[in-house]
Amino acid sequence: MEDTGQSAPRKVEQYPLGYPRLAALQSSDPAFLMFRRFTMLHSRLLLRSQEELCRLESKLAEIDDAERTQLYPSSTVHDENDARSQILQGVREKLRAYDDDLHRFFRSCSYLPPSHDNIRSFSRWMESEKPLIEPETEFLKHGDDFVTPDRDVDESFLEDAVEKFARKYGVGERFLKTERERHRSSDPDLHYYSVQRKQTVVRLLLTFLASAILLMPTILLFVVQDKTARLLVIATFTFTFAVVIAVLTRAKRHEIFASTAAFTAVLVVFVGSIP
View 1 (cartoon, one colour):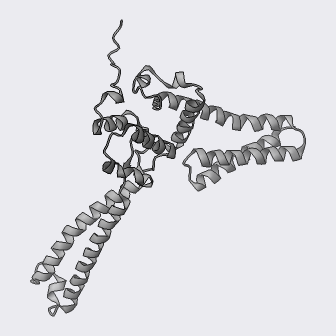
View 2 (cartoon, one colour):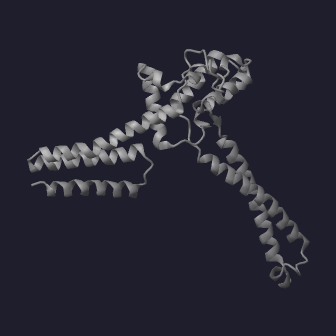
View 3 (tube, helix red, strand yellow):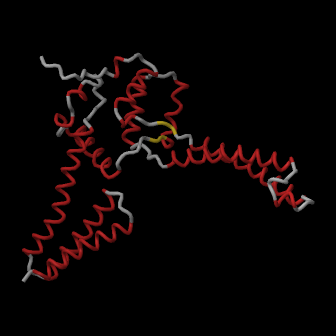
């Protein structure tokens, strides 16, 4: 038998029960990579740091207002006010920490939440396997605070739909699962699908959808002779095109307007060219 150089992955159930098995589950599929953002704790720390900086700002203003020698506020070289130097040094240290915390928090705020289905699947696995003691499962009660790694929103929506359809109806499961995915777990409730194959299906669907939106109105406009019916065809497919762009892509508002206007213009020009 030819050695492909790739051994089958260790099953999730083969890891010791506890944090090792939980880590194995989360690393087995990006759908299970979800962690708390701790939004409230970040806010508490930032609010505290903000108040400390506000107090330092007020003290610095008091020192500046009480300064009797105009030379000191006008020069850093000749400033002999030690209190001001100490305040500014404190501001430097706290502001650096504040800016760092603020940057990290705002960056975490840009992360997307996991889908409700993924949270539900993760919670059910935790309830059935019970890898952790009860007090250490409190984080599950804060599902609205979970974040997940960045994904291509344009494709992730359809990838989730394809996966859900395959899991519910069993259609395409053999294609979506490679031998590697089939050996990831012996749990019948855990379903793993090849990311590359899901992306292939999604791109095929998008290609078919894009072709259909362009070809169907063209064919109908060529066949239909009534002017009112032609206007109805243009209106219907223009609306459909705008909805597809808005729902399935991350296009901005002006991009949606521009692409819809271009699509409508193509149909109108085509109608005008029909004898």
